[in-house]
Length: 301
Image (cartoon, one colour):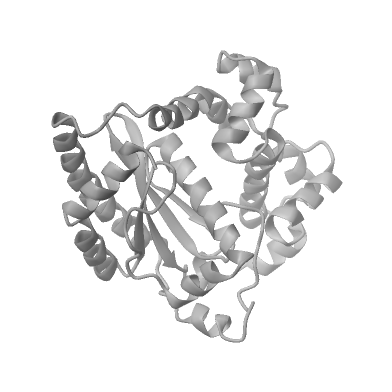
């Protein structure tokens, strides 16, 4: 652990942030935990549900929880705003970035709630392709059914409150520490932000142009780096290779079109950027667990 990491943990504990986190979890009915910029916890989990606690203790499923946390934190860090997503168990979580002097220093991870049935086919992104069965043990289904059901509008309102309180309190603490010379110029800390900033033009480009052919050299040129370096940096920052990330954007487009239009799977496939509808179906099923037609049938009102 670097001086910065241990310093941040000490400052959070000394300013009684754990108490504030506990109170926020109680008031919002959302579990909360604070992590540093590496993803390491610096507080104790507040309001962790029995279901998520059980999942995280599972040797295989717990690994997927960590994968979701990592990617959620990266998205929040890259965009410097709260990022809401659906985890591998179908539970809604939110990563709220802690920003100090325009740098990502950590995040408050909150959530562990589920959407009402009529909102579960909405536009909240599923963060990884893996889907785990809720009934993985004799008691897990019962524990899942105890999770708080919360409409998206209520989640957003709670996130706004947590975001304001956390960033206001921790920014004050970090400012005092910085003025007192407690926070060193940690190289790793700044590298996380620098790497995310380098690939941001490519991320923006893909989100706007995923339906068109996307070339590696084009993305590399946008970021002013070589193609080989871009590929390595992209994987390091996002945890995914370029094809996987791009396909996920295209599948999200497909999901929206399947639920909001009567277009054929072939037409939607072409709009999303797939030349071959068979490949679209294969990728879509790997991402959602369902074929496009099955997804449409299951989620149609």
